[in-house]
Length: 257
Ligand SMILES: Nc1ncnc2c1ncn2[C@@H]1O[C@@H]2COP(=O)(O)O[C@H]2[C@H]1O
Image (cartoon, rainbow, N blue to C red; front, side, top):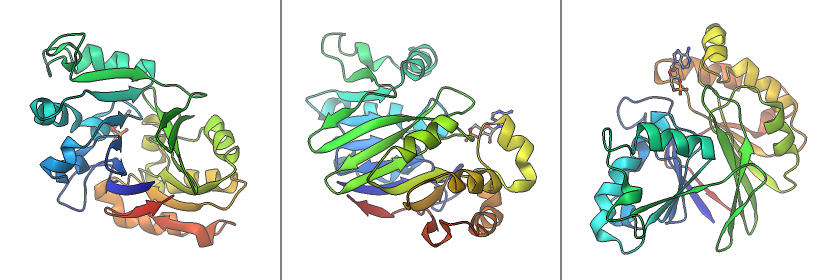
């Protein structure tokens, strides 16, 4: 399993700030932020599965246009996986014929261009040799991260989350956790906003890292663009046990598992 970062910023602003999406091999997206707009038409046509962490735009902005762009170029539907709560939000507020057509009913409900499949913590979606399982998260809207297991180990993605005891427990239960992609959105001086928007600040992130049992390589994602330099300094000031394993996530970065 090969994972490529298409976008990992918490906002927009030039090629350096593309919002969240991970491409798994050629056919799976984890979130569908603006980074997906960098893929060629041929690469877009190869996407069969999209897993969403939650319903915020920075994680799904490209999904409606992806579906429309490839609609008449593909012979099978795209399957959209997310929690039941997130799918309900998308049906009510996005694929509602007002913001975007309901592609689960086009051309008709028996042969749709988009299928929605709920997936919750405790379940696993097997796609060939890849196994994808939701992990708990705690955000301002229903949210879940994902653990992606390949032949050689597991990469976990926190999704958007504030400190979440259930997520820490889930991460500690993954025996072959090689990589953890985890967020930090607001600098320490904006702790109130981090709490209100249910994100992590670097100091909150450090406390989470201190509670991890294993020694995965940690990659920090989702910096708000206006604070990226300060966030990098604050994140890298960590002096706990996992310090040698701590990195910043970048666009184009790849992971092999
Ligand atoms: N009170 C708030 N609750 C949630 N989001 C907020 C709030 N105030 C500002 N925001 C911003 O709205 C953004 C929605 O996407 P994010 O969760 O990435 O980050 C959030 C914040 O940047």
